[in-house]
Image (cartoon, rainbow, N blue to C red):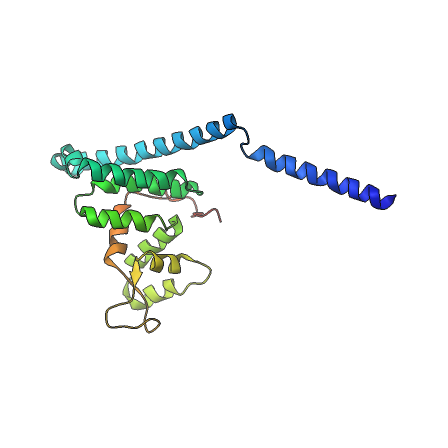
Length: 214
């Protein structure tokens, strides 16, 4: 009798947990559409903010360049790059990654990168998280081999491997794997340039960096 009672209690507890979990996620078509609309609106707003900040900066520094921004790249190329980055923003699990991808859309109009490099950058960004980009920035600004190596050797992060796999870090010419530290590749520097308008929300608000939700 006690055993059957325990089983019944266990079943009810499982049902309660499952009900709470179900309530957290959209289940009906209407709920799914509403959730997707909210995500889309958030991406649209962040994209607008990113382009507004970029346009304002260009107007302040180079009005002539700002006036011809839209002519710097072909419509087909710009549209495809935009759609790739927009898709990455929409499916980003982390809000900060969504903001990063929205800021990356601005990179489409950077005049100092050719269209082939911009295409490579968009593919590299598809495999990176905000923490990876922050590490790449730190490595670029590290002064000397010792500072670079010390930052590279820090434990507890997957960013090192992610940057290598994305092609942002590579083995220096004439060296073999494991014989020396990696160096930032041309693609890695292009990634930094492409998203140089992005700053984590915590950094903008003067808070401790919590990129990645940790």
